[in-house]
Length: 187
Image (cartoon, rainbow, N blue to C red; front, side, top):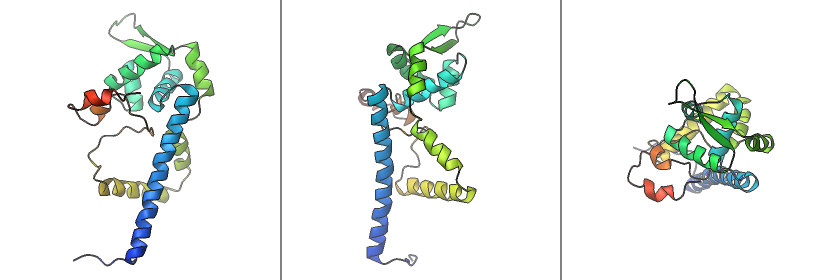
């Protein structure tokens, strides 16, 4: 037995469309922000996030960076490889413990960080923090319900608002068969 609906069929369709339009606006915002970041600074969102962590800390290790951004060390290695090729970081071995590798920003990285815009997730977090607790809980509950409706509850996701593929995407998704195809898409 189905529950009675409060809205007629046409109203249900209109409401569903409004939800989809709102989701599409979120997706477009993330995409446009990612494109602007890449165009203006030559970096992807994950690269800038990692660079910010490196700039905020004194010689962090790769493990500390991975933990701070909630990505695996393998993913961080790929990001650091790209940042190193761009001349933004360099890696040094620890003197007493040669197994530890520290990451240090270059002067070019400091210039990029001084001119880079806030990451989309930083702007979102600042606005979200200003909301009343009840509204935060309502938003979270609604989003979790949307994830369920889209049957996406089993997908792993890092707390990054980015449109480009994150390095190591197949690892994040637990996909060990299709990783080679996706590696071509890595930023």
